Length: 366
Image 1: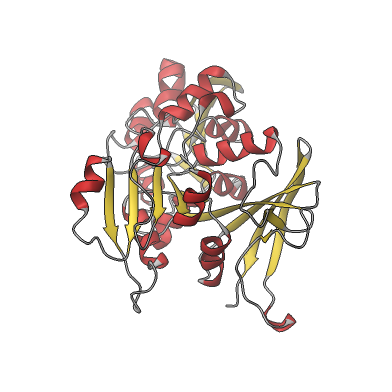
Image 2 (image 1 turned 120 degrees about the vertical axis):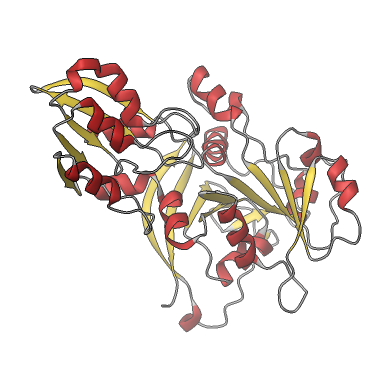
């Protein structure tokens, strides 16, 4: 199963909106077939492993990181493929997280006389697909907020100058976060300040060439939250290829202008009509089959996601430098006393070049 998880991770940047899945076939104590899901619309992990195994799949045990599917999508059910190949046993790391189908694939295998087990290295398998699991269970994607700061918690000089707080290794790491995401969210202030393109650039991913090109070929949806439609249509964001969704409070008859710029307009005002409704935006992105979204924005929008309790994970890149008390803060998160402080559970901390990367989960009141 550990090997199947390694295989599944090869699809980290390419399988969206599908889950990352790996499969290993063992017969007579020998590995006879391996496979992983490479990209949506192509063969699933089990099918690829069966193809490699050929006749040696008969009587084998299949180790698969996610319960074999039992329904027709773009490809036939993997459960049927395993049954047809004569596999004797299937060990799944975890059930399908979709509550409408969970367990049905394993049940179909058992009905065909195949021994099944589930739960081996389940936590590790779930960690590969946090977005797919959350979308299946809630209809919303997994929200990851990326922040970069100095040791004294500042993100830019008072003038807005911020290039570059962190080093090239940290910036390559951010490119990989973009590449694994179904959507990248930013706000008007950030895009106006940096003329951001929010693209995935193969040369900056720090991956082997073929892997980098495959990752960059899948273009995440770029989501611009621009309530008052302030970002000019000749900005770099609109000049770079790839789908763009501009979320505002009211279109004011400008659908055609944005259409010519290659962007789609979406009106999502909150109840007061003063801001974009962030929960509704996440529901919309879930409906568009985005599993993971990356929020790359200024202090205001990032703070709004935290205040709304919408953040699943925060990744902070901390540079070994001081920007001083006049520089801009990390978040706009008004807290008046210690009782209102927000706690984080740090899940990982490591050096990335000259910088440190801190990964944490916010602990919101239940």
